[in-house]
Image (cartoon, helix red, strand yellow):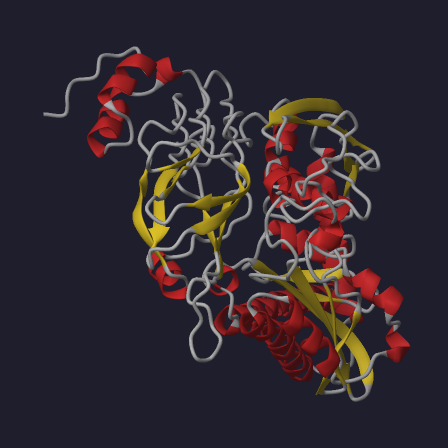
Length: 562
């Protein structure tokens, strides 16, 4: 009996330490948010942070962060270990890379890995990733013909060598980017982020009398794998398929998935998807895997922790040099445009297995608005050009309706990032956001209505033209509804003067005009005829649905709002 009690106490102690480890990595991530220079990191949380064992297995991730960063970062530490083996690591080291094929899928994402030493022995590793506003080259957009045009490539190397900054690397970075202060500041923020993580971990180990975290790591991985295995075993075995056609760059592309449940694992094969594009909307396999695994896990086991124990049971394949598995030197800068649609693809297959756990398709892919000032011939005494700037801000369309609830409006799923506040945008860049409001009639009709998109208008604050590096989707292929729900409204990109713009590629906004973005809505769920007429009336009263659209889409009579 005493032995059983001791075992139970050990389990409780391990769970307490596991929870503590999660709080450590969340503080790690919050440090990055507090110290980052780029608004996309500081304001929107476009980042990831996590702790790894000495084998490079992710043990815990911060809640703050995006699946594309977190799940891709989970596969990245092994590449650092291959380049810089454990015996060659030293206290005070920090390592960095932005290799798309080894980390998070494009050059704008910098990943820093830091070893943790206790009394001279390496006990763990911390990693974090952030999207920097600029990395040189053509900039954050889909126009490049190869990865060489997309910016500065930093192979795995020491950014801090036993406490000393690699000044050669920092000089190269400053010389190759448009916003050197901001990018250099973000690199030091990544370093500070891992420094906080390792200090908190060492304090935790001292408190619990741990010489290492190997036993805790084994418990975390084993317990998570067992929980994920049980969730998969409860599903009907077999192969389920789904296909989605999306906008692409200049021609539509197909995303084709065969999801197989069996042998204690879930495998997703993307054979039949479109070949690689000549533009930068391609994905490397680790980014494809990151968002595919997230889409699967949301439906199958949302309560199971996200670490190596659960991620190892979701595997992904795609034909080499297809759109979802390109090789260098294919361009990949705007990989999120396609990658963030993959949860919709795999959940379309899972709908056949878990119809009450899958939402309708949504806007899904962020409308990441990268704006660039066009330098004029006027410079101040310090050599600065007032019209030149570079800013990335995130905007979001509507989520798909859920089986029991309406979709959320202007909410980012699956990325989870926050929108950047208008006040921040106007402070960082010489632009004015003239309009930012929900877009009526954009949510797809259904028993449960899709979430609304939004309308945004942006103009120059200094009377100069500026450019948008457009990378928007769901313009020609709107989000589809499920179970009889109707599609959401497609997106639109235009000028206030009426000219329609392309949804991909760099385009100039004239000084006397405005950029108008109408973001797509989410698809509806269920037959619209089953929607409660009172809810329709509430939609009309709130301005979410016009009276004309209500009369058209919902068969029950809808009185006026007088």
